[in-house]
Length: 116
Length: 116
Image (cartoon, rainbow over all chains, first blue to last red; front, side, top):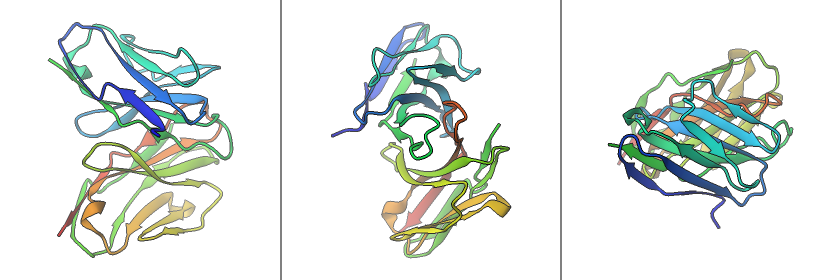
């Protein structure tokens, strides 16, 4: 069973379009995250979310928005896509933030986004 | 703010050699976790180890070992008798306990190439 899954795996789209990436975890975790990996492999947190709060990295454009229909899902919506949005986007999840025993984040397989 | 430095951008060794990947971190928090993740050519991020700031014991898992030294703010990773399958990008990462869902702060990664 896949612990953290993302769809689609590949996404090719035109500039200006709006797209979504879905993420689901079946680990029973209550905190989920989105990371962006750029062309140089650098990984950076975009959002983290649990049922109490959404934390947004201040460098993320407001064209990006996370939506969580329930505890097991955190989808990423991107409006007005730009060339610079091309990257690999990883979803991750972990047990309750602040727990002394469970802060390990488990990652999905990644979604490779190419904006033309 | 936290910072993780992986000074080695790329390392190339011949199979069966031992190799050490360096990781140096900065944080003002006294309670934190350190991690290593592996990203093979297939692209997924694989969790390898978590270490909390109160546990400086070294750890060995098969051919992998980790040396955590708070005095030098380092968390180095050694692969003994390297194999071609170890070829990957390895990331060191840090998160603070109870720091809100700030996510992981990653180093820039070390690309390890094991030549047959």
